[in-house]
Length: 319
Image 1 (cartoon, rainbow, N blue to C red):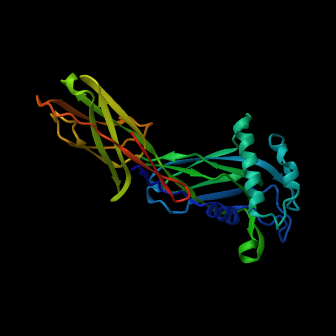
Image 2: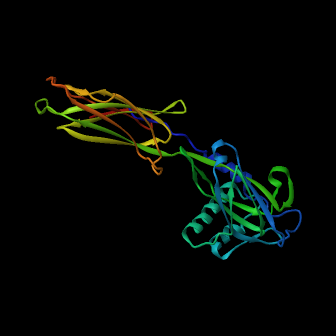
Image 3: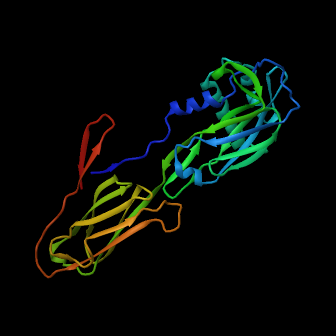
């Protein structure tokens, strides 16, 4: 039975909340914008994942548009494809629109040669940058990885200056902004190679089958369960590779059937730790050895695989 349990990342609702909190809501403040004044931004991680505060997160800022004294925006030449959307920005612009604009700005950055306005690195979960011109900025935080997880961040747009009218009713322009950065956590995945060596073989008995039970546990939770087999028609070495196992998981492989008339030479139970595919030491592996025990006992094996369908039903296949 194959069962993989993946850690779920942030929900779409959480991303929308990010935009509701960080996107520029109001473009008409109580007073004219001082377009000659410099701005600053403090970016902080939201603290959901403790280990992320120990990682360095590179962040790139792209100035997408300049802002006029009345709070309206004009796209810079590299982002002229956003001009029509920027002209319609007002205090009623919803999160979906900001999300769409940020996605379009990101596409421009990724498909053209667009100079980075400023860069910063978040250390200990925060980073600050000063001396920014007024305008609208695309915030792109780079995906970072730990041993077990990958952390990605939704790109978003930030207005400098901004205000807190939506939350507090205060439409005073703020030239020094603090924003939260919400990550999405995804499992890093690795592979497991199970190697079997059959040192001697009795052709009279026909094919020799060997079955392995594979269980993976991480943080006290079973994250993978499977049964696999290897079939030999002569002496030699064969292997099977299992993909998509969560990195950092401790895997126990037990040889539950050693084949009729064949005995185990190595321990029937072996353990290893899954290493992410891109890391040194990947993939993890275990090896077993068997030999003919000089007894004439015929036998065969059947492995049933149960498949959990999206509608909740089960199918099974046999090999």
